[in-house]
Length: 242
Image 1 (spheres, rainbow, N blue to C red):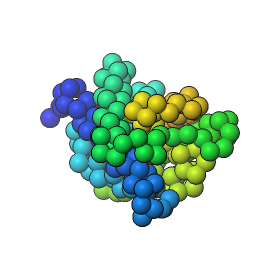
Image 2: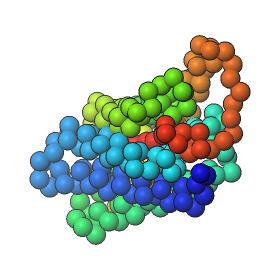
Image 3: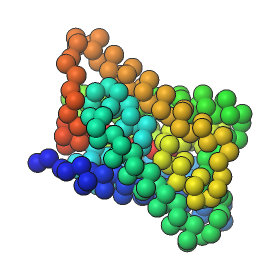
């Protein structure tokens, strides 16, 4: 059964809300208590994505990330006409999550806003790399019938946690413009914010196209589909972020 665009967008908003509330919430709580540590924060981002893919993947495809949605559209796995609704929903959800954290904790730890701890150039390069790896995995499990669909949520959540473990101390390991935009808007922290839009958009596009090229090379050219990923992957969902 086809899910209407408003309902798919609603699922995307809920997923992005959960991502920011739990993931950025872990940053806020850790800044006050020190109970989670860097590893705990990284695992929280991976776990919330894993949970929300399982909960909403059959509805919207579980992108939760403008860079992922853009890359799917670029690779013709998602219709361009639905792109604005998905991205708007993801941003609204992320803003709602950040405002919830502000209401609960106040303006603590910039509400988990991503700010480069190294140079902006290095952080930009890292965001490109991390998001490319993430999108490579997402494209594999969401669009290739040979991948093990039951492990989709685990594979994507684990990739986000892994990227956050080693990339987080440098760039924040956002990999997701919505995840960065919500806390930035709610806290007013915009330092080098362009890194968290341009880096993930370029990285996701490269990662998705790279896997598509490898698949075509392995089994011959395939006709691309314009069908929404939510329809193509009712049992094999795509997601995002850290």
